[in-house]
Amino acid sequence: MKSYQNLVADCLKTVEEIYPWDLQESLETEQSPMLLDIREPDEFEAFHIKKAMNVPRGILEAACDYGYDETVPDLVMARENDIIVICRSGNRSILAAHTMQLMGYQSVKSLKTGVKGWNDYELPLLDIHKQIVDIDEADTMLLSNVKPEQMPPKKTKPMPKVVVGA
Image (cartoon, rainbow, N blue to C red; front, side, top):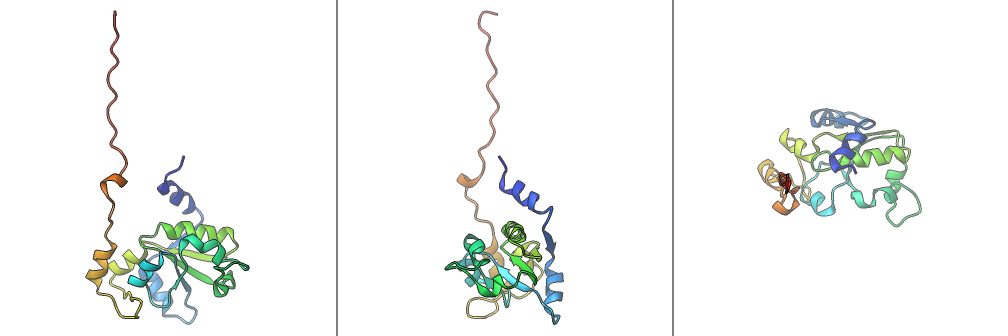
């Protein structure tokens, strides 16, 4: 059985990553890449990188192909274009980029550290109304909210075996 981190590590063998500062630089060129934010709609609405398209991870495969309610024609036609896949921390985007490679996308990369790293580098994030989100406010929203019950159980030491009649 593989863990989530094992799956991500396996996909990193074929998926390239790009750092936020390198992405910012490439967005300032004539041939800027398509930005594909695969977070859930509520995450995207709270803040996202300017010009990013939101296609949640849960419908990605159908969005990348013709003939489905979720089909996004601009995305389907971008199989040979540069695409940067974005998520909160850079893990979901690696899995999504790997899937897109399997579907024939030629130049897809993952944003290393995701929007969290983008914000840490103090690059602008916009809300659904195209207003700049305060860096500290975004930091607070990007904090991990893992609850104790979501953590792996603590390993306990096995009880020593008692040999009777030895």
